[in-house]
Every structure is written in C-alpha cells, then in structure tokens.
Image (cartoon, rainbow, N blue to C red; front, side, top):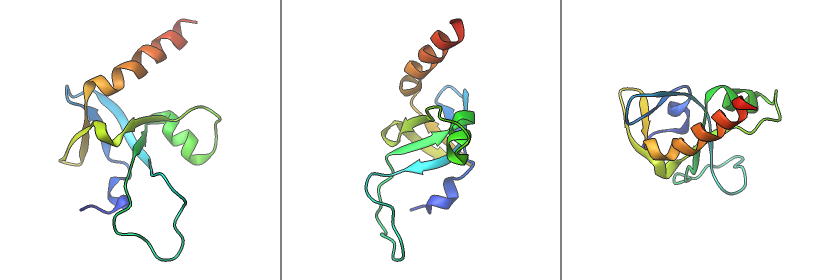
Amino acid sequence: MKRVSEFQLMRVETEGGRLLGHVFDLRSRGEPEHGLTHDKRVVNELVYGKLGLLARLGLTQARATTVAWESVKEIRDGKIIVDEASTEGKRQEAKGKNQK
C-alpha cells in the first residue's frame, strides 16, 4: 500500500506510452479528514496535467483533467499507467475546443 503523498508528481502515461502529464491531486469521495486519518481511504480520481495544476493552485475556473482510478492498469518505475480508452474521449473533446 502506498501513501497518498507518494503519488504527487508521478508521470501519468497511457499503455501506449503517451505522456498525459503529472499527478497534482487525488480525489476521494466523502468529507475531508482532520486529525485522525483512515487507513483505507479510497482514491477515485487522479488529477493531472496543466489544467490539473492550475485547478489545484486555484488559479483557474477551468475543469481539471482527471482519470478514474479504475482506469489505472499498473504503477511501475515512478509511472502510473492508464487505459488508453479512458483518455480518448478527453482527447476528442480537447480537439473540438481547439478547432473553434
């Protein structure tokens, strides 16, 4: 089991090796914890990339780029490898915005 802090700034890549960005935040359902922590808090999403960083810093109203934890295939060599299909919709969405 890893600590949440170990994920900060890890590379996020697709199974094909395409760099998506680096982890800037992790999201979990439920109220924030204060004081005593829970050993088994479930991570639901990774926040990554430039928009993820800006959102984490509170510098933009832009929607952060995320990927569901279920899309994580493996963690190795300081990288989080995610399912290619989980990011395809986000790529198409970004292309549409760039063409406007």
